[in-house]
Length: 379
Ligand SMILES: *Cc1c(COP(=O)(O)O)cnc(C)c1O
Image (cartoon, rainbow, N blue to C red; front, side, top):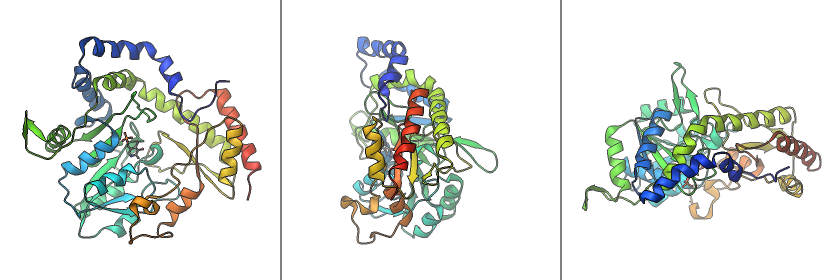
């Protein structure tokens, strides 16, 4: 059996090596490394795939989030609501821009931002909500968009873990992650569901005006060459990464399916075990399983991880410390106990290997060892 990894990018590459290599080669031979035709083509391809009117590729997902908040013209002191249980980038860019991150608790089942908590956190200074589609499942977007509309707030979706995830509104309309708020942001970091071979990201918007501002901001705030109308940044997807993404995008649906099939096997194996809670589902959202994350009940997580490691099975804790307990984000407004669900999740979540090339043999081996680990790790 091939060694088990959290994410197996080598095997995935070997399957599509010819497609990738033949797409990269012309970028090399034409030396169109920056702003080459592959980048434009990728933007058009991803627009067709997601249904977003405008896709603006940038350097990474964190930049996408930062540029989104800049494009909305938020001012220092404006409050931006984010979940406290997420990857740090979501709040980092808020803080970097001098905006005020307001963190809120999450839902125990879906692990996504709690709409009730958002409602309670809105003040006259609130300008935007940044829901994160954590682990590949959309947040409760219908309720979030309604709340935002009622309060005149922008919604910037952090869709870094959820590209291609479909969400269904009660009227039957379907939209993809990143295409529901004013702006959506995604990342093409290699391990993301659509990953390139370095760093990459993109913004999604249906607004012509925002798309124009985003393009200008991502390019040093430059409208006409060497005329800078806005303060911007330098953030671009390079052509080699765009070529990789053009080769991989046609495979995204089958990659998503492979993740969903692996998740279904995990669900099936663990559903009836009281000490393992399988990922809770939002009935309005698909789940594209960027991560498969269990909640351990009455188990010593470190012991489970040690047992799995001994068996050659990696596992990860996403995320061990909620934002409000991070040193850099220490804030007199928040203390331990303020966001009990997030704190409980941080203490009990465990993500299992999840990628597009898990074999039956590997899955059986992981499942069998998780069951054994659990039997030995009760507290
Ligand atoms: C990966 C990720 C980001 C940042 O993306 P980068 O491309 O690594 O900058 C932001 N938010 C979430 C939820 C992520 O998973």
